[in-house]
Each structure stands twice: as structure tokens, then as C-alpha cells.
Length: 89
Image (tube, rainbow, N blue to C red; front, side, top):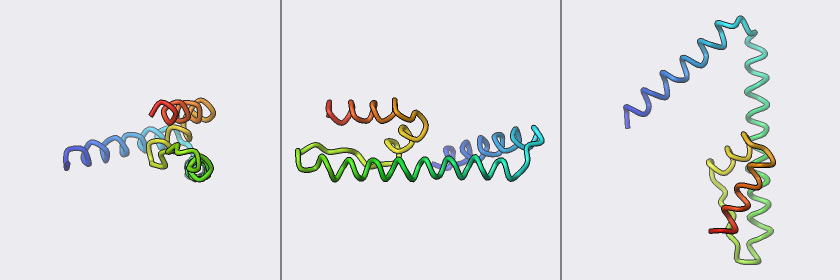
């Protein structure tokens, strides 16, 4: 377990080193993180609403971090991926 944590910390440090090396302002980094968090929150809200709506039809929509990240990163194709995975479940 500590190996995974160490690898994650090293990757995060490399990521921030690359961002700082580009001379990008700290405000721009915070703005991009804020947009990412907003998209993630909207993804969770979308999954939760879909879970409530289709629960009456005995369809289970997974409301978890992987599903939310898929929707956050991919957008509409992510919604379609989760929809297909839900139907084929």
C-alpha cells in the first residue's frame, strides 16, 4: 500500500513541477482545478439524479468515484459509457 502512495506522491510532484516550470501563474492552476472540481460535482449530481429516476425500473446506476471521473473527463461520451455499462449490468 505504501508503494502506491509513494508512486502517487512522486507523480503529483512531477505534475506540479511541470506546471511551475512553464511559468504558469498560480491563479491559472487554481482556476483549472476549480473547473475540474465543478465538473466532478456536476457528475456526481447527474449520477445521483439518474439513480433516483431509474430506481423505479429496477435499474441500478452506480454512483461512485470511477463513474463520476469518467463523466468528468469524457463528458457526453462518458455519460454514454456509464449508460451502456448500466444497461449491460
